[in-house]
Image (cartoon, rainbow, N blue to C red):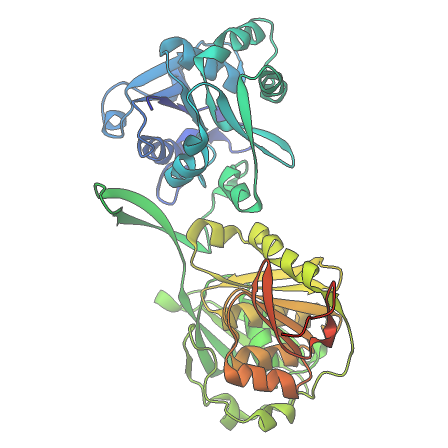
Length: 471
């Protein structure tokens, strides 16, 4: 299907203090990145809608990224995105895929698979979310040009109302946005938005598809860096983690190790300056009346993000520190099935990278209390525990813990440290995790994938819509 793609380059931003097109995003100007994204969609023509003072040209580096046409907005007018869309449609008689310059989370794969794949060649196409239409990553058609020109001439510049009218007239179709779609449409409006992403890093890769031609493109991967945890200035562990929420990670680590039990036992958590690669990757925890068993605590000098704190094989030793759960609470299978969508909607970095685990804590009504992501599922859970400890929210005895991966003995131990009665996971539990849950009086749910789930222990807490039929 032949179509054109247009970058809406905008102009000077008051909040940014400069032209958004030239702001750096992961080391390159936003305009350069967005043009490459559009070029990778397979558009027959690539256009740039901009003002002359933005210094786009029809030669040089822009041609290297496939910019075939530059369409200039008139000077001394402020017609917004509508003006750019109209002039691009006037320039070339093809369906037009538009993308705003300040939407850097958008990817060519999303535009191809979620937008262009649903385009029938006749009607325009736009996503609709909770806050209205998303007109700056959408498809407009030549059939819409007359009505858009009329709106522009009359000064009606609002795209929301114009798209609503186009939908009523059958000129445009709507795709209802799913939770996983939302992060792609986030734009940058403040200097903080343009700061380096702590959780994801840009890389280049070669995408290969069976029967297709290999193509070079950008991708985002989850960041992974070491964090050295110190207690009273003494090194106790190095964990591989995704940067962010480091204070919570350290606090949760010490809670699950049994070093601290209460919020007031942590006097301070200091981020050490460090040098070289350790810069910003050292935290020192000052504890109060807690008794530190140095010999036990330092036996894990290195803890890999994939395996967590390995080596504890005695369930009895855990119960000496954390007694079994005694509360009796209930939930429903329907509520449990609803948690996955809520977690995915809140997982901004996973949506971009596909490379992070998530742990989330919900109340018994299914309201999200906190969610943390990390390359290591143990780290993500420690961050949840640290959040609870630092905010004096423990115990989580009226809550449900959601895990995005498999359930190991260590994960159950950490959940018990927080007093969680119900643990629900997307993947499988280990045999020791099931044994631990049974003995700790915790309800363990695995393979939580609508319309199925497995209840491995203490099923009385999960209310079923009807009695289980005998086999």
